[in-house]
Amino acid sequence: MSGPVKVAFGPAESTPGMLVEYMALGPGGSEALPPFQGSRFRVPPGETSEPDEHAVAEIWLVRSGRGTVLSAGSRTDIRPGDALYYPPWVPHQVTSTGDEPLEVFSLWWTPQPQ
Image (cartoon, rainbow, N blue to C red):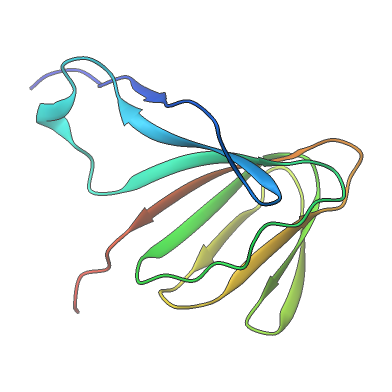
C-alpha cells in the first residue's frame, strides 16, 4: 500500500461573484484517483455567487469568513467550521456577509443507488 497522494489546486478561475480553484492530483497521483472531485473557492465581501444546482451530491467546509446561503427557499448563516450538505439537484447560492472573503472547500461525487 502506498502513502498519501498530495492534492494540489489548479490556477484560480474567475466566475461571477467568486474565484474557484479546482483540485488536481500531483505528479504520479493518477493511480489513486479519489471517488470525488473538489475545489476551494473565495467570495469577496458583499459578493454573491451564481445560483448552482447539479446531478452530484456536494459538501461545503467553511474555512474562513461569514456568509448566508440561499438554498431551496431557506437562508442559512455560515461561519468557519460549518459543514453543509447539498443533495443532487438542490439549488444553492452564497453571499459573503463578513469583512473578509468567505473561503470554502467543496467536495462532490455521484451518489450510488441504494
